[in-house]
Amino acid sequence: MHSHTAPEQGFDVTVFDRHRMSAMETSFANGGQLSASNAEVWNSFATVLKGIKWMMQTDAPLLVNPWPSWHKYSWMAEFVSHIPDYRASTLETVRLAIAARQLLLKHAETYGVDFNVEHRGILHFYKDAAGFAAAEKVNALYNEGGLERYAVSPAEMAKIEPSLDPSAYHGGFFTPSDFTGDMCAAPSRSLHACTAQRPRRSASKQTRLPLTHVRRNPSAATATRAASRAASRRRA
Image (cartoon, rainbow, N blue to C red; front, top):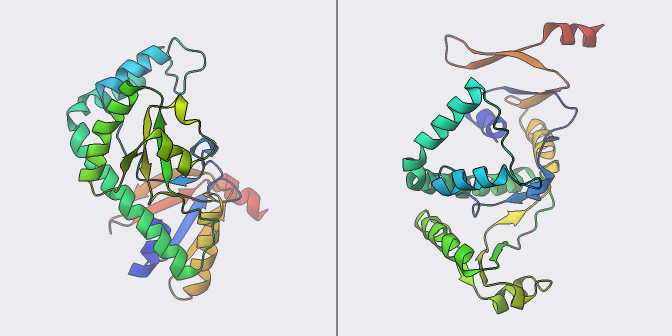
């Protein structure tokens, strides 16, 4: 998104990517969702306990290898040290997520970018009262941060998503403003559209070009240096 907004402020931008297309490492597991309803930060004791429990599961959604290394354990220590910031960080993250969604839609409308947006909202559902109660506390923070997200009964869930069996769930939370889209198409189509409409200040892209250094020059602009041998091979 920065490569789109920076040219509007008078900068020429070049995006370096080691792949032939944009967003080729986007997680398919996220389903292309553009959501503010998943903005809760992970810095909590509940996350630490889940991480320990998941180390005993072969099908864990997130698996941490306990084999010691300075980088890993120093990162873990820093992670735990930010647990007191959980509330403030979650509020700030949900506000940023709301702003990011708005900016993406604004750019799509301004430059005529079609990335198969589906404005159907996002539904979170819970099978037991304990899970629902924990989500209720998080939802209070989302509401405080400015996100419209509300509780729905099993019957209301079935109306939103008919494939759900109401008898199998305790309840859920629905965010009508969240949406989904093609996260591989969005950046590449946006780049082409921005480049075409900005003849004087533009965003361009170099693909399949690994980077070896990132440095900041004296004028405070960020400079990147591509691997010279890779560039030489491309010229040969």
